[in-house]
Length: 141
Image (cartoon, rainbow, N blue to C red; front, side):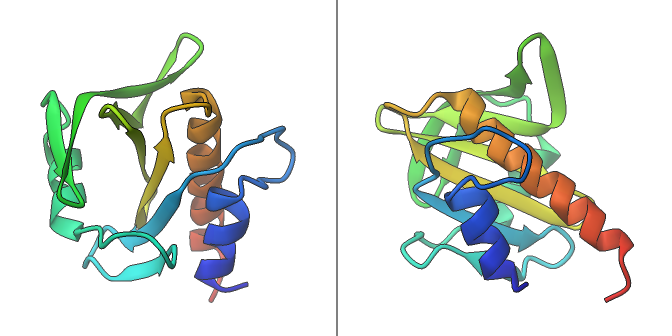
């Protein structure tokens, strides 16, 4: 399966096997966290800069971030219930939200409309692709 197929099936369409997820990310991208090469990106997704995403993971203690020429606020560790995820963050502005995940090899980004999709469903989609990417990195390619 190609990276764009993984992106379409597991992040934008939220079809992660074994999870009950409905709703979709508007845009999504998988970017190498080693050299910034875009492995896959939604066709309608605005350009997501490796430098912008890398900066977020270098300093996740800021309250405001810039991505795709837009500002997002309230950057915080993603939570599911009472559990915080060290390598998964969420931020919002008045129209959109963004989830960031980091696996061994990639940065994973999902951009979603704030309403009507709950944050937790988007975070599950991000977790799913992180799990998938980590599993694939162990396989011989």
